[in-house]
Length: 252
Image 1 (cartoon, rainbow, N blue to C red):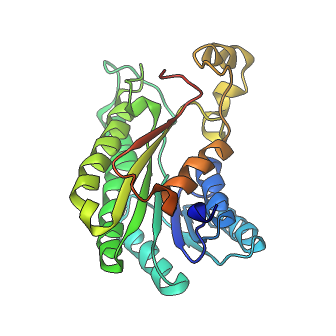
Image 2 (cartoon, helix red, strand yellow):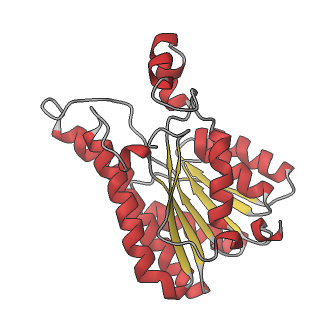
C-alpha cells in the first residue's frame, strides 16, 4: 500500500468547498498529503481545513476565483511557500447549471462555460506545470466528464469544454512526459452532488437517469477519491495522458 501513499506531498484542489472537490481533498489528506483548498466561499473552506487538520495533515484555505489567472498564481505560490511545495494539482472547479439546445444557446452562455471549464484549466495547468518542472515532477489531475467523451444533448458547450480539457491533457502529457510531470483526466458520470440535486432528488428524473446507467444508480462523490489518489500517487508512476472513466458503466 506504500505505492498509494502521499505522505510528505503537497496537493492543491480547486472547487474544493463541496461535492467531488471536497471529497478528493479529504481523500488526498487521508492518503497522507498536506492540502491547499480553493473555492470562492471562504466559510466552506475553513470548515474543510478543520476536517483535514483533524486527519493530522496541514491544510491551507485560499479563496480563489479560477477565472482570474493572478488568483491561481497566488494559490499555487502560497501552497509552495506555506506548505512546502507543489506535487499534485486537481483541477476540479467547473460545471454548468443550465441546459440549452444549440439553436437557442446564448453566445454569452457558451463563453461562460468555456471560460470556467476549459480556459481556467489551461491557466492552472500551465502555471502548475512550470512550477512542477522546476521541482522535478508532479501530477496534474483534471476532472473532465463523460460529456467530454460522448457528446451530451443540450450540453454542447459543456461537452466542448470537457472534451477540450481531456485532449489538452493528452497533448500536454506528451509534451511533459520526460520532465516527470504527469497529466491525466478523470471522467465522472452522473455523480449526486448539490450541483445536480434537481435531477437526483426528483424521483421521475432520477429514474430516467438511472435507466441509462448499467449499475442502476448515481455515483457518490467519494467514489471519485480512489481514482484521484491513484493518479496522484506513485502507483500511477507510468500513467500519463490517460482518462479514467468512472460512470457506473454508462459509456460501456
